[in-house]
Length: 195
Image (cartoon, rainbow, N blue to C red; front, side, top):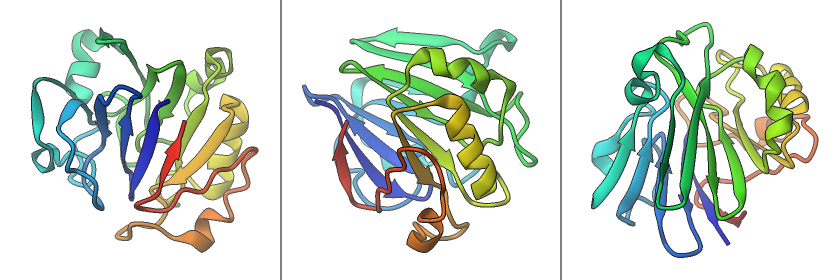
C-alpha cells in the first residue's frame, strides 16, 4: 500500500508499496532522505522547485511544468507502473502556460496534486477519474478556503487534503480546520498516511 508523507507547505512524498519514491514540489520540511525515482514540479516558483534537496536514483525522472507542457499541451508519462497525467493549473499569480497539476496513479490509487491553482474548467471532468486523494492549496491568495472547498466538491475525490495553507509557514492547523470540504483529511507536517 502506498504512503504519503506531508512535508509541509506544498511539499509531499509518495512511497509505493515496493519502495519507489515520488516527490512533489520539493521545498519545505523534512523527509528528503529517500532517493527519488521521480520528482514532480508543478511550476518554477522557488517554494515548489527545490530539486537540489533530493538525491536521485540513476534512472530518476524529473518532470517539471516544462516537460509537462511540451508541445503546448498537457502531457502524460508512464514508467515502472507509475502513471502521471499533467492537468491544468492557473491562478492570479500562475499562468496556465507555466503551471500544471498532476494526476498520479500508483498502487491502484489516484492522487490529484493540484499545484498552485484556483478553480479550472478541467476540474469538472475529474469526477469521472475517480480520484482517491486530492490535495488543494488553501492559502488565500491562490485559492480561498471557500473556493478550495468548492473545487473539492467538483473533483469528488474520496479524501481532500488542505495544503499550502499559510504563506511562509509549514502549516496552520486552525486554518486547515476551516477547509469545509467533504471527506476532509488533515495531515500535519511530518505525518505519513497510508493511501
